[in-house]
Amino acid sequence: METIKLDLGKAFAKASGFIAPDVFSTYKAAAEEMNIALHEKTGRGSDFVGWVNLPNEIDDTYLSDVEATAKSINDKNIDVYVVVGIGGSYLGAKAVIDALSDNFAHLKAHKPAVVFAGQNISEDYLAELRDLLDEKEWAMCVISKSGTTTEPALAFRLLKQDIEAKYGKAEAVSRICAITDASKGALRTLASEEGYKTYVIPDDVGGRYSVLTPVGLVPIAVAGFDIRALVEGAKVMAKATAANVKFENNLACQYAAARHALYTAGKKIEILVNYQPKLHFMAEWWKQLYGESEGKDSKGIFPAAVDFSSDLHSMGQYIQEGERTLFETVISVAKPEREVKIPEDKANLDQLNFLAGKNVDFVNKMAELGTQIAHVDGDVPNIRIEIARLDAYNLGQLIYFFEKACGISGYLINVNPFDQPGVEAYKKNMFALLEKPGFETETQMLKGRIWKVPVVKL
Ligand code: PA5
Image (cartoon, rainbow, N blue to C red; front, side):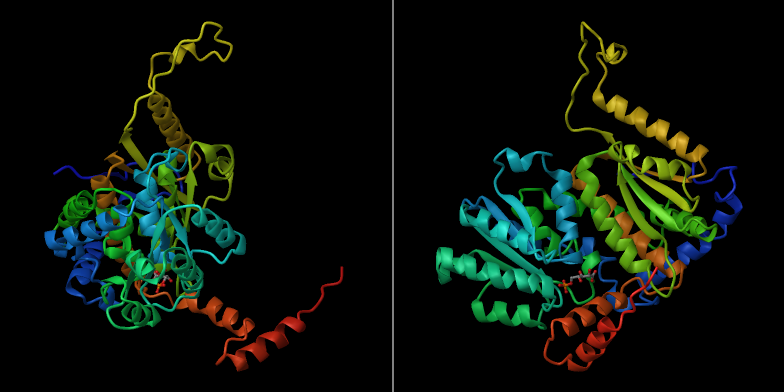
């Protein structure tokens, strides 16, 4: 079975700061060991490694149930499907749906349009979404593992009232699906009371590793994409990166070891590069996966992302000549889904006739190659991941590959890749400032601090 390709050849180079092959090889055994720890549940946070075997546990009955839910929603002839969630309960579905959708789906009357809510607290966003929904046929799902996250809870409170006002209580219930914990949290209680169709997020799968649970599968199926191919791709990659697959053939171990070697050599920032705008949100998902998993205990590579060639005209300058603490990981799609040939032009004022008859993708690929050479010349190590096509099967592979490498990578820097204690700090302050009951002491302390911020006189 063909898998995605990983090229580390340009991460090993003579220029200073790059990984010497012998340094890289010192991490081989450690990467294999960390992979085994994930499978044997002997590493940190092992209560949350349910995603490791998840692709093999998804059976036909389960997929058929998700597909039946998607069909019953689409049978209502909806224009818009609203997915309410944030973080891991948002980014995976958004990444896959965007990657598989027409770039202009929202202007081509594709039904249903999947839109998101509860991923921000913007009053304008919610007001404009409600204006839109007022004129459309719609349904929604609300996703929250904890069932208590403020942003989606706030959005759902509003949208629940709107959908009930528009369709009446009974019909509204048939248009709402809740995806949450099996037994805990306010959303589970509400869903049971209201009688919503529900799906369970397994206890041992954290938010950012949950795209192959109903968190991703339900919205992706409603959007009309092939969840079987997505899961199949993940299964293939699970097999290719299993505990018994040696480093030489194990792409997840290799990527994790290469990142670790670069990090150890002072490359503190990894930039995920794409040359297909549809992959923008795949990079957002990847940023969350790696940032939340590794950025703790004052450690971790800072995950950043750029869209090329657009950002070659902005961030390209920094990458070429700025501080030399970065490396790039490029996702390259071998074959586009569509074909556009460059036409001959009689006047040739733009002097592009030398490209006439060539595919636009040929120019994109030469931009990619030229950039790789320039950035490597500029001391930016380059890791390249090639996927054959931008389809559900290859995305399934890519998702599992990144998840597996992230678990290994987190263990290599000796952090727990499955918790996110740092996310609580802003929540505590926000609740204190909002004067939430139970936060009285924090409210007093914060107010005292705010009023006392010294004014700096120049
Ligand atoms: O990865 C994570 O665990 C987080 O990003 C969560 O997904 C995010 O905070 C949303 O949490 P919840 O699904 O509990 O609303």
